[in-house]
Length: 476
Image (cartoon, rainbow, N blue to C red; front, side):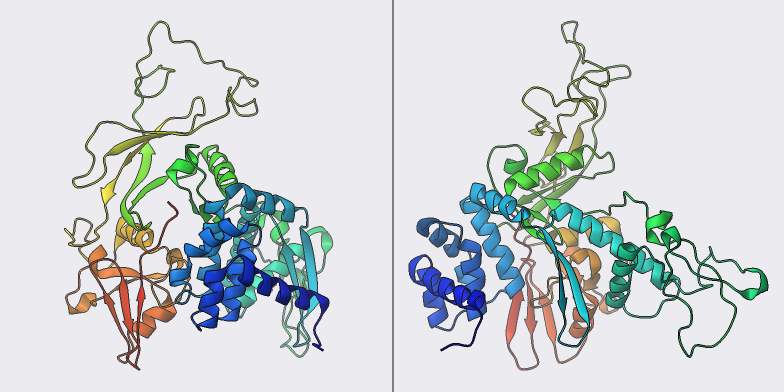
């Protein structure tokens, strides 16, 4: 008799049934030792909503590399495959599980406790997470000790409880009170944590301003997030999944909703990446406002306005205006070539329109990304890659190029494969993102990392084993 809970027993039986009925390929790989039980369970859990034929189609899309992927990378890959096979079922599962949203509290084995929200809206989770990080940086700037993980945990509690954990007298808003006495209040008079604590050295205390809920971080705070969406999905031509950096694959319906929300924000930036049949980036361009047709012209930018062109309705309730209803058929993105050649060797110049009246179209010049011989067109003259080269390196590798590392490239170093001091170029053919840990690991003489012309990074460990990190596979 197994001494396990009913839930664990159900999961075990469900895994066995999935492998036997729906996932014969995963079963064979598991029995051959190519994937672990945990990886088999990741595939089975993601494919559970599909019928047998769909499950096998999704399985086939990841099984050839399942053994070499980390569990997190495999989870993202099989989720993307499930969304490609049947996006409607993926959307239904997301909406169904959203009705089970909750906050969980539990006791840690150490005697501490945990608190987490589950089944929350992805975009709001990212905004909340970045708000936590923003307040954690305020705490670090004010001198609170601890690594970023500990500071984010403290910031999480500060925001929930409305308190301020910045050390007294360590920030510009502090001021001495008469007699050298002070106190720390959070929003609404909630007491803070502060002070020197029991046994701390005595000294004058200074009041801190109200905490993160009272103006230090605006209530509507939302940081920048990266949404990747196939052009065919954006244009309603197909139902391919998108990806939200920091979350993972998202179903086409959610990707479109987020894209339309981004289009309404004038601070959003847009880039277009061309991929090969494997999803590897081979071209990229970032948008800038297209030239308007002329002053006083209320027509579509770069489109002549004739005498028969109808006036666009204006006013707060006009279709398509902020606060008004959507225009007939809803807002739709359009993407069309301009007929101009664009950068040499690239993929032309394109015009992107969000379908929002009064909003200027965007022009995108798509240049090539080297997938073989490099012409060094983006080479920087010094050690610092600059904004454009760093961005292009992050496009080709969206995560750290260390073996199995999934840290976002935006939080990694631009690392020269051949050191700049040894004559290495500051160029796409000699640079890629590495997190600080893997950057230092590569500098260990026992390890080697070679950047191949394809953009692959081949690592050799001290024992002689080799691992290859390929460029990011974007949804196509």
